[in-house]
Image (cartoon, rainbow, N blue to C red; front, side, top):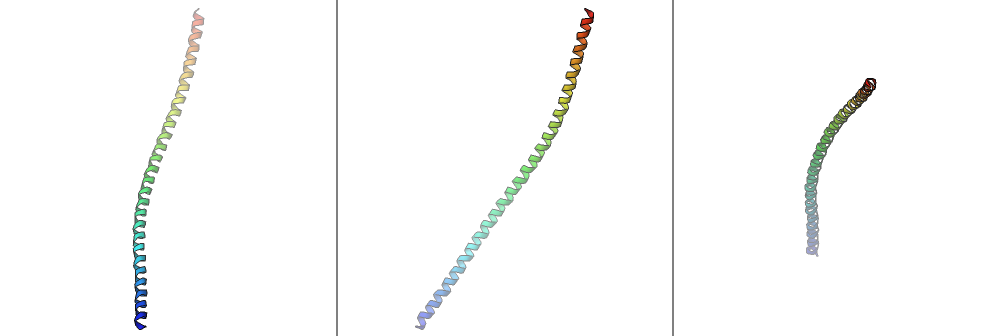
Length: 98
């Protein structure tokens, strides 16, 4: 009977050790996956930062182009007004010369 109890006790110890070893392996795998995921997260954050920087640069360029467009539109309006005035002046001069 003592031998049987010792055998069961040894099996229990082996089972506990196996479970500990298995848990340690799982923990190591999870650490490895966590490290990989952290690396991917860092890479994605870097890409996000780069895209944000490009977006900011494009927005700045857009704002500059919009400002330039507004200036050119104002200049066109002024030139169209001057052209209309000159055409009116020409028309009046032609009427006076007839």
